[in-house]
Length: 415
Image 1 (cartoon, one colour):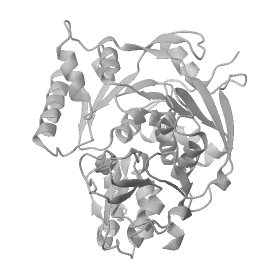
Image 2 (image 1 turned 180 degrees about the vertical axis):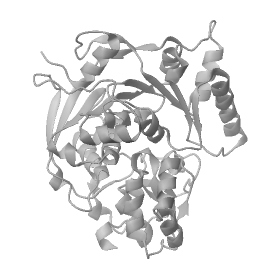
Image 3 (image 1 turned 90 degrees about the vertical axis):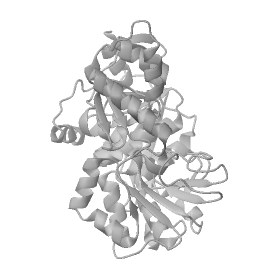
Image 4 (image 1 turned 90 degrees about the horizontal axis):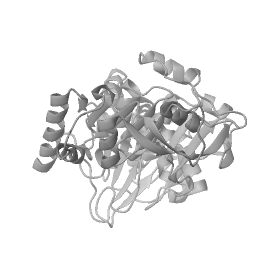
């Protein structure tokens, strides 16, 4: 019996010839990422150990991205703790350079790796054929100290993508459609694998956006086959694969779906759940107070280009704050070179440093009582970006930008 991509990566990390869904294996981790959301807690636990040590400091990557620059003395103390520990132990450390998952994709992730991240959207790394999964502080600490962990091998749901997305429809619309189809619990502790001719039509930015949001369907990880697009991205960033895996023809899948990309339409996820998806036209006319273009899901150069093209020569609605936040410093610099930042500023947008911003909801751009945000962020849970009586709608860069111009939810073809 053959193995899935997820099973093959775990087998390699466990030193086994084969593994099966439902097995529990001890695995060696290739990389360990943590950000300022929880790293201070990991440090506190580390300092309580009887014999504290780091198994392999070269595998650790720490990134300050959630509240940067710091928004309070409490946050500043947390950052200082993280900064000092990283310097003391020689940990690869980023501060002010962007959102953790974007930095990991730009600088670290390799196909075939097994990566733990102290952040739920670590599944984004599947865009490069790596098994990325989010863990809590305790699991992260154990892996940091031992270099190993245990993994329950997940079942895999396969999504075969056919055709091509229509003009004006984006990968963001596709993954929200899939989440709406299978539900927020539809892939609980499963791997979501994407294959088919349709994958070849997707850019690396598209693939990251798709894999990144799979956790919103409960997925343990997400994976895409490594092809010429992925290899070109790796070559551009000076890296080589660890392994390149594909699922065997006789691999066993928990479920399989066929998705016709040509049938995908602009989508909005309504409050307060990511699977509460509808055709964007159903939300047209909903008044908004703020729009956000950014995050690890939709803050790359391709997303900024979409927004800038729509808003060029137009203005942000006078009653709307439009936050534009590049996902990394590299994206910011490219946007500057292409004139995109100037376009956003001329339109009246607020352009911010590369960070999580209002997607995280505790720092820049928090909305007020009863206010409505339309966002390219990852979640729209009650209270995610403000008080419990505020509202968050999720949509693509195009729909968010069009809404910022209109002052209400609008699609790009309405502008």
